[in-house]
Amino acid sequence: MEEKKTVLSCIQPTGDMHFGNYFGAVQNWVHLQDTYDCYYGVVDYHAMTMPYNPKKLRSNTWDLIINLMSAGVDPKNLFIQSMVPEHAELSWIFNCFCSFGQLTRMTQFKDKSSQSNQSSEDGFIAAGLLTYPILQAADILVYRADFVPVGKDQEQHLELSRNIAQRFNNQMGKEYFKLPECLFTETPKVMSPADPTRKMSKSAGEKHAISIFADPDRIRKQIKSAVTDTGESSGEMSPGVANLFSLLKASNEMDSYNSLMEDYKKGSLKYSELKEVVAEALVKVSDPFREKRAKLVANKKDVKYQIKQASIRIRGRAQETLREVKELAGLLNAKM
Image (cartoon, rainbow, N blue to C red):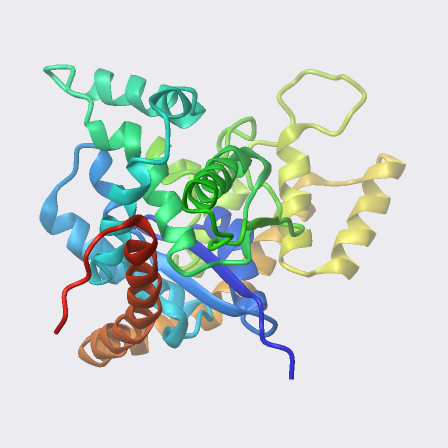
């Protein structure tokens, strides 16, 4: 029997899960579980690179775990990064196999350092903001992942992981790390209902994101107020209308999608009807998530036990990798 390939994907604990998160990543995570050996991490170390509140970080971490389980992620595939310290130890080793120049060229460092400088009174920019791509490489390589599901905007980070793995292999004289590959899947780029020129994100304000656990009336209200035409006519579908169609397609309501698209092409589409259909499609998607989440919240103690046990089991694989890496790198392993 052929051994399953390994998939690794991680997400930061940054609050409630919206439809952009679900359609853009989590839905794919759920589907991948049927084919691959999956490791899904809630990366709380990464959330420390920007100013944060410790109590909120801990709370957000458990909230995200519950949200992921509610959306269909198997708890046995979930781990919390800070429960697997091998990520941080391997990250230090990888610091010595990555150049300073490579890190300064990372586009996300440029963007986030600018944000951090603006949000901090003393202009403080954490060194972790520069080096977190190395920790990201450790996240991937500690599990010897074959594939990493990524969007086009994340290719640069995976390429750095491949560069680090190759440099390590070359210096050790052994092809120890496999070079992880991008796993491109068809995932929609969900835009803000309030501003369809920007990605859906809660950090931009509540009106820019629709929670997958929101009350049905709240979902209907947000879709009803979604921007459609901006008043400019270019002969192409406006970003707002395109976003509504994208949400409908992502909800797998293809009959409605095809019917309303025909109306659009004929010039007879009523935006009010499109919004109503999209709203009901999103409510239909969210209903089972909301119900499952209520049950998990009521049994939070059991959820924590499951995730701690999963993290211990998953840590076993990370420990094996780190032990072998230290042997290759001339470092000492403690004998217990």
